[in-house]
Length: 254
Ligand code: PGA
Image 1 (cartoon, rainbow, N blue to C red):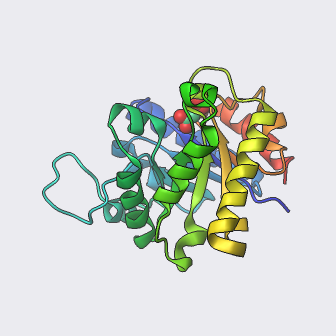
Image 2 (image 1 turned 90 degrees about the vertical axis):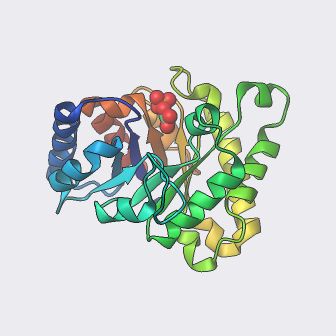
């Protein structure tokens, strides 16, 4: 059976009331339908604690969208992995292209964050992906290889199973245009082979999600691909019925 993870990245959207309402609808649906897929939501930081109370005791998992790599310290405005764990987070999105682009996060910083996250018993949803320019210059696989090799460098064996990879071509994020099934298949296969090269059999078990304009219209086709183990969903995760439709397609793809 194919393991599936459907993760919602709420980015910098919603106020408290809206966020709570969305979490309530999703958790109610999940409890009523008990999907085989793992369902995760990553709301903005201020909503993590209130939402942790809403989803407590349900199958919905909580994640953050970023963190610092130090356990604590004089880092004004930052949030540590241990703080996230203390409010009930189990996942943290690391290395999202918006963090790489707008906040200048590089592969080395991302690697530090991944190591910090696994040390606090959290699972990183480690985002990788090429820009349009890189794809057009045939650099896609070079970029993916560099991102994975640096990001996961010196990762201890016991932590390999905590890693989730999200292949998110930068040009497909928030554009309404997802990658084609051929592009997704090829990239996921490349990533899988690289993970097996790096971690042997352990590398076979790492979940590889697709992200980039995944929605209820393309989810059926994309999630049914053999190498796709779920999705990291931005825009479509902000609407409960869209998100639930995607979960339903994931349920058909195990
Ligand atoms: P999108 O975002 O689904 O809105 O393209 C995906 C992401 O940024 O993770």
